Length: 359
Image (cartoon, rainbow, N blue to C red):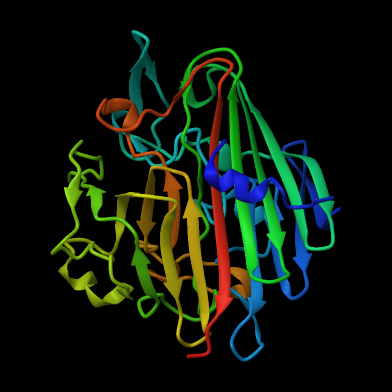
Protein backbone atom coordinates (compact mmCIF):
# COMPACT_ATOMS: atom_id res chain seq x y z
CA UNK A 1 0.00 0.00 0.00
CA UNK A 2 1.49 3.36 -1.04
CA UNK A 3 2.25 6.05 1.51
CA UNK A 4 0.08 8.57 -0.29
CA UNK A 5 -2.85 6.16 -0.51
CA UNK A 6 -2.64 5.73 3.25
CA UNK A 7 -3.28 9.46 3.54
CA UNK A 8 -6.54 9.01 1.63
CA UNK A 9 -8.01 5.73 2.81
CA UNK A 10 -9.30 6.96 6.17
CA UNK A 11 -11.25 9.92 4.72
CA UNK A 12 -14.97 9.44 5.44
CA UNK A 13 -16.89 9.63 2.21
CA UNK A 14 -20.52 8.99 0.78
CA UNK A 15 -23.46 11.81 -2.93
CA UNK A 16 -22.33 14.30 -5.40
CA UNK A 17 -24.31 16.87 -7.33
CA UNK A 18 -24.77 16.15 -11.02
CA UNK A 19 -24.84 19.55 -12.70
CA UNK A 20 -25.77 18.56 -16.24
CA UNK A 21 -25.70 15.58 -18.58
CA UNK A 22 -26.00 14.47 -22.20
CA UNK A 23 -25.34 11.52 -24.47
CA UNK A 24 -22.02 11.36 -26.31
CA UNK A 25 -21.51 8.47 -28.74
CA UNK A 26 -24.26 6.60 -26.95
CA UNK A 27 -22.71 7.07 -23.51
CA UNK A 28 -24.14 9.29 -20.79
CA UNK A 29 -21.72 12.12 -20.06
CA UNK A 30 -22.28 14.51 -17.18
CA UNK A 31 -20.77 17.38 -15.26
CA UNK A 32 -20.37 16.71 -11.55
CA UNK A 33 -19.54 19.00 -8.65
CA UNK A 34 -17.69 18.09 -5.47
CA UNK A 35 -18.12 20.85 -2.91
CA UNK A 36 -17.05 21.38 0.68
CA UNK A 37 -17.60 24.86 2.11
CA UNK A 38 -16.06 27.43 -0.22
CA UNK A 39 -13.89 24.83 -2.00
CA UNK A 40 -15.31 23.05 -5.05
CA UNK A 41 -14.26 21.21 -8.17
CA UNK A 42 -16.26 20.34 -11.27
CA UNK A 43 -15.55 17.27 -13.35
CA UNK A 44 -16.84 15.39 -16.35
CA UNK A 45 -16.68 11.67 -16.98
CA UNK A 46 -15.50 12.48 -20.51
CA UNK A 47 -11.83 11.66 -20.04
CA UNK A 48 -12.43 11.66 -16.25
CA UNK A 49 -11.51 15.33 -16.51
CA UNK A 50 -11.25 18.20 -14.05
CA UNK A 51 -13.15 21.23 -15.39
CA UNK A 52 -12.65 23.71 -12.55
CA UNK A 53 -11.07 24.09 -9.12
CA UNK A 54 -12.49 27.02 -7.14
CA UNK A 55 -11.33 28.38 -3.79
CA UNK A 56 -11.08 31.83 -2.15
CA UNK A 57 -7.95 33.95 -2.67
CA UNK A 58 -6.31 36.10 0.03
CA UNK A 59 -9.09 38.71 -0.37
CA UNK A 60 -11.87 36.13 -0.13
CA UNK A 61 -12.61 36.25 -3.88
CA UNK A 62 -13.60 32.86 -5.29
CA UNK A 63 -11.01 32.00 -7.94
CA UNK A 64 -11.01 29.23 -10.53
CA UNK A 65 -7.40 28.06 -10.90
CA UNK A 66 -7.83 25.33 -13.56
CA UNK A 67 -7.95 25.93 -17.32
CA UNK A 68 -10.85 24.30 -19.13
CA UNK A 69 -13.99 24.60 -21.22
CA UNK A 70 -17.64 25.38 -20.54
CA UNK A 71 -19.14 22.62 -22.70
CA UNK A 72 -18.65 18.87 -22.94
CA UNK A 73 -18.77 19.22 -26.71
CA UNK A 74 -15.54 21.24 -26.60
CA UNK A 75 -13.81 18.56 -24.53
CA UNK A 76 -14.61 16.04 -27.26
CA UNK A 77 -12.44 18.01 -29.69
CA UNK A 78 -9.73 19.11 -27.26
CA UNK A 79 -6.16 18.37 -28.33
CA UNK A 80 -4.51 19.87 -25.23
CA UNK A 81 -5.76 17.26 -22.72
CA UNK A 82 -7.27 19.91 -20.43
CA UNK A 83 -7.85 18.34 -17.02
CA UNK A 84 -8.04 14.76 -18.29
CA UNK A 85 -6.62 11.41 -17.26
CA UNK A 86 -4.18 10.39 -19.99
CA UNK A 87 -3.00 6.86 -20.81
CA UNK A 88 -2.75 3.87 -20.99
CA UNK A 89 0.73 5.35 -21.08
CA UNK A 90 1.23 9.04 -20.46
CA UNK A 91 3.80 11.02 -22.45
CA UNK A 92 5.63 9.65 -25.50
CA UNK A 93 6.44 6.15 -26.70
CA UNK A 94 9.15 6.31 -29.36
CA UNK A 95 8.34 4.84 -32.75
CA UNK A 96 4.83 4.02 -31.50
CA UNK A 97 6.04 0.55 -30.58
CA UNK A 98 7.59 -1.60 -27.87
CA UNK A 99 8.50 -5.24 -27.25
CA UNK A 100 7.10 -7.15 -24.28
CA UNK A 101 7.82 -10.82 -23.51
CA UNK A 102 9.27 -11.22 -26.99
CA UNK A 103 6.22 -9.82 -28.78
CA UNK A 104 6.46 -6.54 -30.69
CA UNK A 105 3.41 -4.30 -30.31
CA UNK A 106 2.68 -1.55 -32.83
CA UNK A 107 0.62 1.32 -31.44
CA UNK A 108 -1.42 4.04 -33.06
CA UNK A 109 0.84 7.03 -33.68
CA UNK A 110 -0.55 10.51 -32.98
CA UNK A 111 2.62 12.59 -32.53
CA UNK A 112 4.55 12.23 -35.78
CA UNK A 113 5.80 8.62 -35.53
CA UNK A 114 5.37 8.40 -31.75
CA UNK A 115 2.41 7.64 -29.47
CA UNK A 116 1.44 10.48 -27.13
CA UNK A 117 -0.76 10.03 -24.02
CA UNK A 118 -2.17 6.68 -25.13
CA UNK A 119 -2.85 7.43 -28.79
CA UNK A 120 -5.68 9.01 -30.77
CA UNK A 121 -8.32 7.16 -28.75
CA UNK A 122 -6.65 7.08 -25.36
CA UNK A 123 -8.31 7.34 -21.97
CA UNK A 124 -8.81 11.09 -22.38
CA UNK A 125 -10.98 10.48 -25.45
CA UNK A 126 -13.64 8.18 -24.01
CA UNK A 127 -16.63 8.32 -21.67
CA UNK A 128 -15.93 6.76 -18.27
CA UNK A 129 -18.66 5.32 -16.05
CA UNK A 130 -19.57 6.83 -12.69
CA UNK A 131 -19.40 3.88 -10.30
CA UNK A 132 -19.46 5.55 -6.89
CA UNK A 133 -20.22 8.98 -5.44
CA UNK A 134 -20.58 9.91 -1.79
CA UNK A 135 -20.21 12.73 0.70
CA UNK A 136 -19.76 13.11 4.44
CA UNK A 137 -19.18 15.90 6.93
CA UNK A 138 -15.64 16.80 5.87
CA UNK A 139 -15.20 15.35 2.38
CA UNK A 140 -16.86 14.18 -0.82
CA UNK A 141 -15.70 11.94 -3.65
CA UNK A 142 -16.54 10.46 -7.04
CA UNK A 143 -15.09 7.43 -8.84
CA UNK A 144 -14.93 7.01 -12.63
CA UNK A 145 -14.10 3.66 -14.25
CA UNK A 146 -13.30 2.54 -17.78
CA UNK A 147 -12.86 -0.92 -19.30
CA UNK A 148 -10.18 -0.79 -21.99
CA UNK A 149 -10.43 -3.75 -24.38
CA UNK A 150 -7.55 -5.88 -25.57
CA UNK A 151 -5.84 -4.16 -28.49
CA UNK A 152 -7.21 -0.68 -27.85
CA UNK A 153 -4.78 1.76 -29.53
CA UNK A 154 -2.52 -1.29 -30.01
CA UNK A 155 -1.95 -2.06 -26.30
CA UNK A 156 -2.16 -5.71 -25.20
CA UNK A 157 -4.73 -7.10 -22.78
CA UNK A 158 -7.90 -5.89 -21.14
CA UNK A 159 -7.44 -3.18 -18.53
CA UNK A 160 -9.91 -2.02 -15.87
CA UNK A 161 -9.08 1.58 -14.95
CA UNK A 162 -10.47 3.78 -12.19
CA UNK A 163 -9.83 7.24 -10.78
CA UNK A 164 -11.26 8.62 -7.56
CA UNK A 165 -11.35 12.36 -6.91
CA UNK A 166 -11.81 13.38 -3.26
CA UNK A 167 -12.31 16.92 -1.95
CA UNK A 168 -11.72 17.88 1.68
CA UNK A 169 -12.78 21.39 2.63
CA UNK A 170 -12.33 21.68 6.39
CA UNK A 171 -8.90 22.67 7.60
CA UNK A 172 -6.61 22.74 4.54
CA UNK A 173 -8.23 22.57 1.12
CA UNK A 174 -7.23 19.21 -0.33
CA UNK A 175 -7.86 17.40 -3.60
CA UNK A 176 -6.73 13.79 -3.85
CA UNK A 177 -6.49 11.83 -7.09
CA UNK A 178 -6.28 8.06 -6.74
CA UNK A 179 -5.64 6.13 -9.98
CA UNK A 180 -5.87 2.34 -10.28
CA UNK A 181 -5.60 -0.08 -13.20
CA UNK A 182 -5.96 -3.86 -13.12
CA UNK A 183 -4.49 -5.98 -15.93
CA UNK A 184 -7.20 -8.57 -16.58
CA UNK A 185 -5.75 -10.83 -19.27
CA UNK A 186 -2.20 -9.94 -20.38
CA UNK A 187 0.83 -8.00 -19.28
CA UNK A 188 0.67 -4.39 -20.45
CA UNK A 189 2.41 -1.07 -19.80
CA UNK A 190 0.46 1.39 -17.64
CA UNK A 191 1.47 4.93 -16.67
CA UNK A 192 -1.48 7.25 -16.03
CA UNK A 193 -1.24 11.00 -15.50
CA UNK A 194 -3.62 13.75 -14.42
CA UNK A 195 -3.28 16.59 -16.94
CA UNK A 196 -4.79 19.71 -15.33
CA UNK A 197 -3.36 23.07 -16.38
CA UNK A 198 -3.00 25.23 -13.26
CA UNK A 199 -2.88 29.02 -13.00
CA UNK A 200 -2.96 30.10 -9.37
CA UNK A 201 -3.72 33.66 -10.43
CA UNK A 202 -6.98 32.42 -11.96
CA UNK A 203 -7.58 30.59 -15.22
CA UNK A 204 -8.33 33.92 -16.95
CA UNK A 205 -5.47 35.95 -15.42
CA UNK A 206 -2.93 35.70 -18.24
CA UNK A 207 0.33 33.72 -18.16
CA UNK A 208 1.99 31.83 -15.31
CA UNK A 209 5.50 33.24 -15.81
CA UNK A 210 5.35 35.11 -12.48
CA UNK A 211 4.15 32.05 -10.54
CA UNK A 212 6.84 30.85 -8.15
CA UNK A 213 7.74 27.17 -8.45
CA UNK A 214 9.85 24.79 -6.40
CA UNK A 215 10.48 21.23 -7.65
CA UNK A 216 12.00 18.75 -5.23
CA UNK A 217 14.19 16.97 -7.74
CA UNK A 218 17.83 17.33 -8.72
CA UNK A 219 17.64 15.23 -11.90
CA UNK A 220 15.81 15.08 -15.21
CA UNK A 221 15.51 12.64 -18.12
CA UNK A 222 16.81 14.75 -21.06
CA UNK A 223 15.25 14.52 -24.51
CA UNK A 224 16.46 14.46 -28.10
CA UNK A 225 15.28 16.75 -30.90
CA UNK A 226 12.08 14.68 -31.24
CA UNK A 227 11.22 15.04 -27.52
CA UNK A 228 12.07 11.38 -26.89
CA UNK A 229 14.15 10.61 -23.76
CA UNK A 230 17.75 9.77 -24.53
CA UNK A 231 17.83 7.20 -21.73
CA UNK A 232 20.26 9.26 -19.66
CA UNK A 233 19.54 10.84 -16.29
CA UNK A 234 21.22 14.20 -15.73
CA UNK A 235 21.62 16.75 -12.95
CA UNK A 236 19.66 20.03 -13.07
CA UNK A 237 22.30 21.92 -11.09
CA UNK A 238 23.55 24.92 -13.04
CA UNK A 239 20.85 24.57 -15.71
CA UNK A 240 17.54 26.39 -16.34
CA UNK A 241 15.79 23.24 -15.06
CA UNK A 242 16.99 23.83 -11.50
CA UNK A 243 13.98 24.61 -9.29
CA UNK A 244 15.50 23.21 -6.11
CA UNK A 245 15.14 26.71 -4.70
CA UNK A 246 11.86 28.50 -5.51
CA UNK A 247 11.88 31.03 -8.32
CA UNK A 248 9.45 32.27 -10.94
CA UNK A 249 8.68 30.21 -14.02
CA UNK A 250 9.84 32.94 -16.39
CA UNK A 251 13.11 33.84 -14.68
CA UNK A 252 15.25 31.33 -16.60
CA UNK A 253 13.02 30.44 -19.53
CA UNK A 254 15.03 32.57 -21.97
CA UNK A 255 17.96 30.17 -21.47
CA UNK A 256 16.00 27.28 -22.95
CA UNK A 257 16.30 26.36 -26.60
CA UNK A 258 12.55 25.95 -26.95
CA UNK A 259 9.32 27.75 -26.09
CA UNK A 260 9.16 26.73 -22.43
CA UNK A 261 9.44 23.86 -19.97
CA UNK A 262 8.41 20.34 -20.99
CA UNK A 263 10.62 17.90 -19.12
CA UNK A 264 10.37 14.89 -16.80
CA UNK A 265 11.87 15.24 -13.32
CA UNK A 266 13.14 12.23 -11.38
CA UNK A 267 11.33 12.50 -8.05
CA UNK A 268 13.27 11.78 -4.87
CA UNK A 269 10.39 11.37 -2.42
CA UNK A 270 6.67 11.93 -2.06
CA UNK A 271 7.01 15.73 -2.05
CA UNK A 272 7.05 16.76 -5.70
CA UNK A 273 6.43 20.50 -6.11
CA UNK A 274 5.10 23.74 -4.64
CA UNK A 275 3.57 26.58 -6.68
CA UNK A 276 2.71 30.07 -5.34
CA UNK A 277 1.04 33.14 -6.83
CA UNK A 278 1.64 36.43 -5.01
CA UNK A 279 -1.37 38.24 -6.48
CA UNK A 280 -3.92 35.79 -5.11
CA UNK A 281 -1.87 34.38 -2.24
CA UNK A 282 -2.81 30.86 -3.37
CA UNK A 283 -0.22 28.17 -2.73
CA UNK A 284 -0.42 24.59 -4.03
CA UNK A 285 1.69 21.64 -2.91
CA UNK A 286 1.77 18.26 -4.66
CA UNK A 287 2.58 14.96 -2.99
CA UNK A 288 2.74 11.82 -5.14
CA UNK A 289 4.07 8.28 -5.13
CA UNK A 290 4.99 8.31 -8.85
CA UNK A 291 8.68 8.06 -9.86
CA UNK A 292 8.56 11.06 -12.20
CA UNK A 293 6.80 14.35 -12.91
CA UNK A 294 6.47 16.19 -16.20
CA UNK A 295 6.71 19.95 -15.73
CA UNK A 296 4.96 21.57 -18.71
CA UNK A 297 4.26 25.27 -19.20
CA UNK A 298 1.54 25.19 -21.88
CA UNK A 299 3.88 25.89 -24.76
CA UNK A 300 1.02 26.22 -27.22
CA UNK A 301 2.07 26.72 -30.81
CA UNK A 302 -1.20 28.59 -31.31
CA UNK A 303 -3.77 30.03 -28.93
CA UNK A 304 -6.51 27.74 -27.59
CA UNK A 305 -9.91 29.32 -28.22
CA UNK A 306 -13.19 28.58 -26.48
CA UNK A 307 -11.99 28.48 -22.88
CA UNK A 308 -14.31 29.05 -19.94
CA UNK A 309 -16.17 32.32 -20.21
CA UNK A 310 -15.05 32.73 -23.81
CA UNK A 311 -11.40 33.06 -22.80
CA UNK A 312 -8.65 32.41 -25.35
CA UNK A 313 -5.71 30.70 -23.65
CA UNK A 314 -2.39 31.96 -24.97
CA UNK A 315 0.97 30.22 -24.59
CA UNK A 316 1.99 29.78 -20.94
CA UNK A 317 -1.59 30.31 -19.71
CA UNK A 318 -1.11 27.41 -17.28
CA UNK A 319 1.37 24.88 -15.98
CA UNK A 320 1.07 21.12 -15.57
CA UNK A 321 2.53 18.93 -12.83
CA UNK A 322 2.01 15.49 -14.38
CA UNK A 323 3.26 12.85 -11.96
CA UNK A 324 3.95 9.73 -14.00
CA UNK A 325 6.27 6.91 -14.91
CA UNK A 326 9.29 7.98 -16.93
CA UNK A 327 8.47 8.77 -20.59
CA UNK A 328 9.20 5.95 -23.05
CA UNK A 329 10.09 3.62 -20.17
CA UNK A 330 8.97 0.63 -22.28
CA UNK A 331 11.98 1.25 -24.52
CA UNK A 332 14.54 2.04 -21.79
CA UNK A 333 15.35 -0.92 -19.51
CA UNK A 334 17.23 1.38 -17.11
CA UNK A 335 14.04 3.35 -16.37
CA UNK A 336 11.57 2.14 -13.69
CA UNK A 337 9.33 -0.48 -15.26
CA UNK A 338 5.70 0.40 -15.97
CA UNK A 339 4.68 -3.17 -16.91
CA UNK A 340 1.65 -4.55 -15.07
CA UNK A 341 1.24 -8.33 -15.17
CA UNK A 342 -2.11 -10.11 -15.45
CA UNK A 343 -3.83 -10.01 -12.09
CA UNK A 344 -1.68 -7.15 -10.81
CA UNK A 345 -2.93 -3.65 -10.01
CA UNK A 346 -1.26 -0.36 -10.91
CA UNK A 347 -1.47 2.32 -8.21
CA UNK A 348 -0.77 6.03 -8.53
CA UNK A 349 -1.82 8.62 -5.97
CA UNK A 350 -1.64 12.42 -5.88
CA UNK A 351 -2.51 14.83 -3.10
CA UNK A 352 -2.90 18.55 -3.83
CA UNK A 353 -2.99 20.80 -0.76
CA UNK A 354 -4.04 24.44 -1.22
CA UNK A 355 -3.41 27.20 1.30
CA UNK A 356 -3.65 30.99 1.34
CA UNK A 357 -0.72 33.20 2.22
CA UNK A 358 -1.33 36.94 2.56
CA UNK A 359 2.34 37.94 2.25
